[in-house]
Image: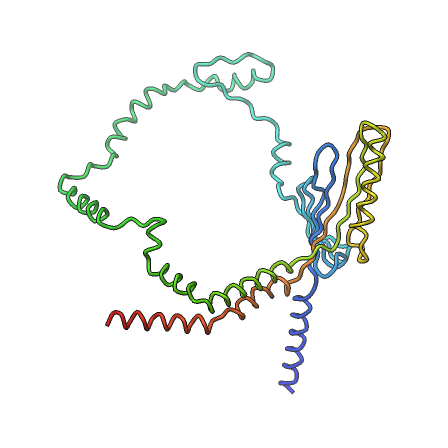
Length: 305
């Protein structure tokens, strides 16, 4: 009975892990352009935007987490000190010693309160503090401590300086050169790198691209001509069966204007993020690399004998 309960719990845990690893993770970016480029909002959603949605507003500099499209679980301002600093009243300016301050109704009480404070002679305080600083100074090293410093310099001068050309004389570079000189290992490592790079390009996918613009040129004829070119481009390249791309514009023949707004959505998942790394680690040519390393080590030991 106990083992059956444990198996059922492990089954639910495995199903939950598969659900989390293959659930889509979406990043949505919204922006607009009107005399200046402005980033409207950034959305991070897991499984579906109606289930979990994290919204960042760059204009208000605030972040909020929304569950089930209704309940705001967490909301905070990323820079709360900025608003509090702006609301504080300005601090009164303290006049420096030896300077006079203009008598104003707001500053008269401040001057009367500070009038009883005796002046402090800064030069005298600095002069009095000089003997204490001299007493706390560290004693100079004796002449007997100089010879070990000279020996250290001589040892440092004897050590060879390693630079860019010094790396080519190291044993590590010689091993790399031997590995690259093997034609079979070179072919295997190049094919492994190519496969891994192609898998990394499949981590994310563009699921949605929307853009809408309003434009107008100085000449209505030029505006109509540009709008005709746009319709030809839209019918040839943007018309896809998945409706991932939605680009549209509206011409304005009365004025010279350009305004636009759009959004881009990128989709990925935890499985797609970690799969290229796991496959790259598992498909590396370990056996051929180990055989080549042992062969090189044997040749080196035979040469030393």
